[in-house]
Length: 496
Image 1 (cartoon, helix red, strand yellow):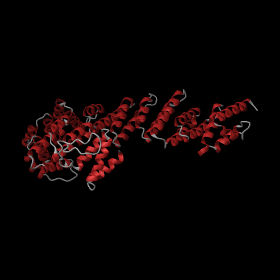
Image 2 (cartoon, one colour; image 1 turned 30 degrees about the vertical axis):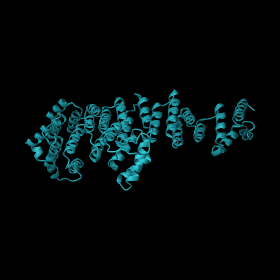
Image 3 (cartoon, rainbow, N blue to C red; image 1 turned 120 degrees about the horizontal axis):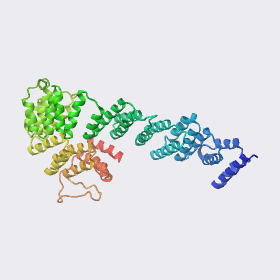
Image 4 (cartoon, rainbow, N blue to C red; image 1 turned 90 degrees about the vertical axis):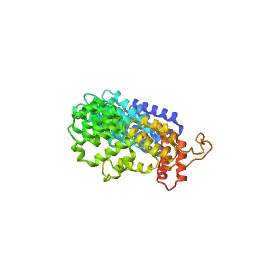
């Protein structure tokens, strides 16, 4: 027996004896430590209950330096089947860097084996593979980076995908294009924060001017969706888009971020059009002058207004509501005729619904009009203060609270939304949970609406108060089983 066989026999025997006596008997089939015999044993035990034996044999051969790249790939498969994903990733990496012809075979097998692992195991395995690959002086950084990033993108490890592309950017193989593709993908899927992250990273790593422009515009649009107006404006400027639509967008963003002087200068530079007229009225609204905004519409001789009577009526009604002239706005709203496809259809219908609902309550109408105004101009802190200051409860208080809370929730202000709902709630319901049953003066008031209860349950869940959210959702099912919000409550319960 040569020295290689003696070494192999010694190692494999030691491993088997150390691991478990029961494993020594299969090795007796290869008394001389014959390599081919051991490989036959491995193939025999590479499934099901035999996996620990195959793992031990592979470990012995690996220690003896007897595994080539093909066998390392098979060894990685065994480790994966045993759930030892980080060890498997390290072995797949060794296979990839030991024979560059098998790079994609090793990574493809690893991807296949990781597909059913949980997210934490996938993320850990990818980190292990990355460290191993980059430690090799012969590693093709771009190949490994692109494959790992693509895998992370397919498996939902989006932050890890962006991190890989960002950290492993090189001048020889820039990652800007892949980051832009990732940003677009996230934007299309409405993952706006991830889109911003990828686009911002792409902007600094793009190797062509057009790529920077594309990245900046994706970041701009993503920030718009997130309602982060300041950042949206910055990225719009960086995108260097100067067409008429971009100029109009710049005006609206300057208005919404309080840069009224810059907005005014941009408005002056626009050619005569309906857009210019409406932006001028918006300017007055954001300057806190709704009465002047209304007067501008009423007295304007602009041909653009005359050619768009429906738009003019919308702005008249809007400014009347914002300036407290709500009863005067009602006939204007009622006279508007439009199709569901009109861009302002939902807004016009909302105004008509609220004026009809609150027609006999002038105080509530006045509060609602002020609330709509501050929501329109984005002063959500003032909006919350307005509702809390008036302390309206009952059905109307709940309606107003839900209106504002929805807007707050859209911007991610879940705690603020819940605070508004709790302030306006007409009744504290005993849900059988400590701290929730808070009777007011020992009197039971009118029951809360299912819409109010449902949205409050949503906000409770968003703020981590899951027990209360679950109890409130169950109460909706018990009290209003046929209501549309009972269906929503069932969906919410499935997510808690």
